[in-house]
Figure 1 (cartoon, rainbow, N blue to C red):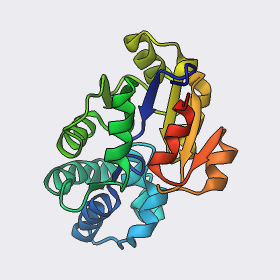
Figure 2: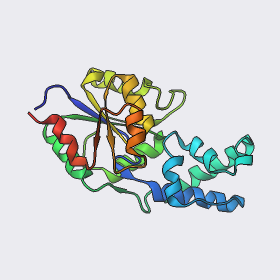
Figure 3: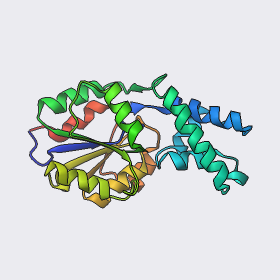
Length: 221
């Protein structure tokens, strides 16, 4: 086994799971109830990634984004709506089960870090990826700062007793790549997710992969 890397830290949305339609359907339902314009599913690729509160704010009409009462009300509605719809269309990306199998066979430690609220992160991972052992599964949980602050990534490394430079960090956004770089982890960007190769490279990706199985090249003897 390639001795340099001993663990993989995964993002969730856009990396392990394709959650886009459930997020879009839920938020569009909230917007429709409020009498606000809705957005095409593809637009949500740019709304997600920095926590649900930011997702909510970004989808609102520009002249309502600074209205904290509206943001708070829509956030509460989004939590309730997504709580009903989170598993309607979400699925693991093709090749993810095989990647997790391969990593587990090699004894590579695995953990999850998302900006999705902690409860939803744990729920989606346990439901859609029940057959694999993740040492830590963590979502946004105040007062710990969300990504790209490296605090949670470094805490996970400490929990696993593995130095940060021995981690591969796999994600699909510039936020993920910045988190990896700030934590001293090896940043790998996925091209099946929500953002572009350009964004990933500009944020510090050390490598890009087109399909999940490509990650195993880092663990070849």
